[in-house]
Image (cartoon, rainbow, N blue to C red; front, side, top):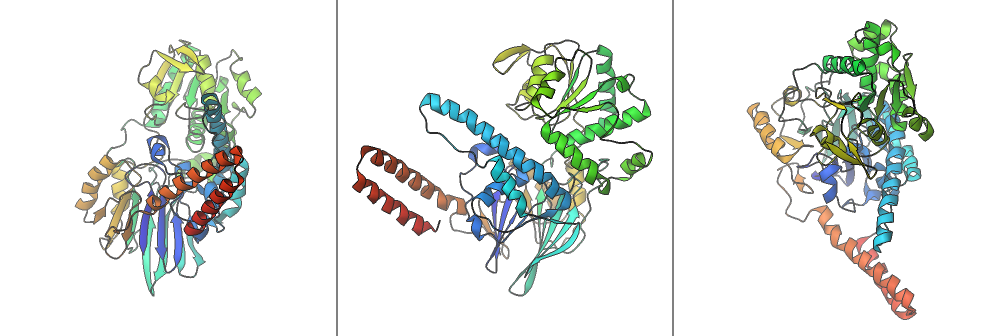
Length: 520
């Protein structure tokens, strides 16, 4: 079996692993690169999408699922195997990602047009993303027979609604290869999710995430920190703005607020409306409300039995339209606004920050990671002024940062997950993390008695020897071809405009020959 790391190797995002055996090609995850990782993303997959036989998806987050619409657009005809909740979340997240692609491309093309540069196209449109939803094939947790020689077992990873670790059973030369892909491993004691399920089976290879492999969870209880932050903010009388990721974090916050209301533990909270101002967040909340009870831990089940409705309490409001979103800032009464994006770099949250950052009685509560270079990070780092929509805004609001909310296991949680595997595991591939984090975490995993490999991006490994293949990585083989095709197309355009039909026909022949050579 050949294993090629097409993403999330020595980097955090873009999870995508290609497995080749017995004439079959299988992908596990097909994620979009984000932040710094996106700057080095190739323009092509490095494999032919139409040759892939099956795709397995660990969960719905875009850094694991975001290129599936592009995969389908480029010719993939098979199914994307995932859990039922993952399929439902992807059905709203794919079109949202497509819409973002269209908006970002429109913005870039306005710049390009002014600079006389060529226009670009989105990776995929919202309509193309909706077409990709048809490829989703939902399974329950447990074993599923996929095709001859391929079976999968979906195990609750406790990270997000429907998130799973996936155990693949792949038959090659009459022998079964047993591989486990961790996906993202969740924290314990997240009320809306059960704790991660530990795998104790004999397996050959484990592919493991390492996002927080170098840190331990903040000992401060995030629920108490959130309760205190709301109590203090309500006393000031101003608005409370909470930048939040639309899927997962927003629903966790609503859960906590509903419990505070039931307990009466935050004075005055019952008199203040709570707005969800994110179309994706609203749609995701509806899915959490309908699908969530199957995933609740004991605490959430107990509250539900008492009659608490986490996503439909009396003071909850939703802003679906742009007009409803704008109206929030023209209402002078105190309110709580939960809006995306979580890092304040796009979306409706920027409007709410523009209207509230300058006010000394307002409070901004950060409940998620703020990447370097984002508006959220600038505010957290103490900027006195920030620029929003071309206008300089003074930061007078109270700024609160709560670090304890996280869907990822910390170092202790990751080690607890891996140590349940027998020591007969041949290799543990460390993925989905910064390289320096992986190197530190590798020492801890080796101390438990496991053989560890930190793979190279785009490198191909033999599953028998775990040696890196000598041939050039797949993606690099295609890069010169992409350049050649674009160069020929540009020449074709220029020659066609000059009226030289003979030369244009000659270039067309070159293009056809090149396309035939590379099979696409």
